[in-house]
Length: 274
Image 1 (spheres, rainbow, N blue to C red):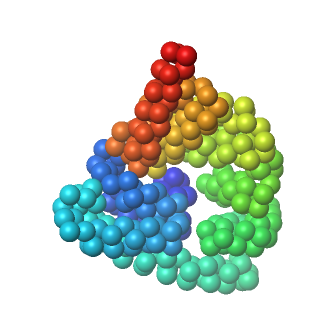
Image 2 (image 1 turned 90 degrees about the horizontal axis):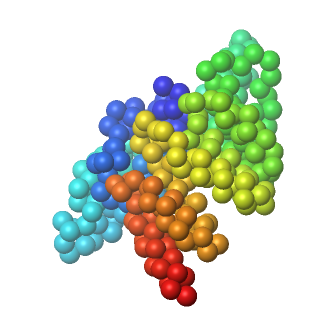
């Protein structure tokens, strides 16, 4: 599946992909955040967050009262899983460079350049990622065309080029497999480009897209959380509450959304009385 390959990166997280924690099963916010990073191939961030959470959990006098208690076995397994895939990820980069330097078919070379660019992006080497993307010329396999442009947009955003990112993302709206991610990232690109009202409208669309997997649900929830926060800060309390109410109650963003929805409702009542 393209979504799994795109988020996890190089098809390496087989254990994680086979044992996803669904939105309805998730009880601990920080474990959910670690999974969210892992789904995007950001293994170092996932390891760092989960290591911290486990250390705090094991230091508690009554760990059974902590929400991680419901996932502790999965969490312990996942740390090892993430560490393994982080090391494999680094080795994959060296192997891909060897392919690029060899005599291979154009389509194969282009896919290798894309995979290298993705690894470099996830390591924070954004200029190198752009250079790797620039090596993609000619025939590009159909199954990665959308992924190539989505990565290009992400690199543009990371290098302070939100206007260029928005142009690329606008062309990807018709790609259903990327729908939620394109919708959210386009909103953020518009916001970074100073186009706040367009960003708000785009976040509203992203927050109402149909989803069919935990990663898609997480990005939709994040869209609604960001939108609700922006509307709250601008004094549009009623619309902020409606957006925040769309956040899934069992997801990793539920606590923040519930808190801000409460603030929005209280502020709306105070405004009405005034």
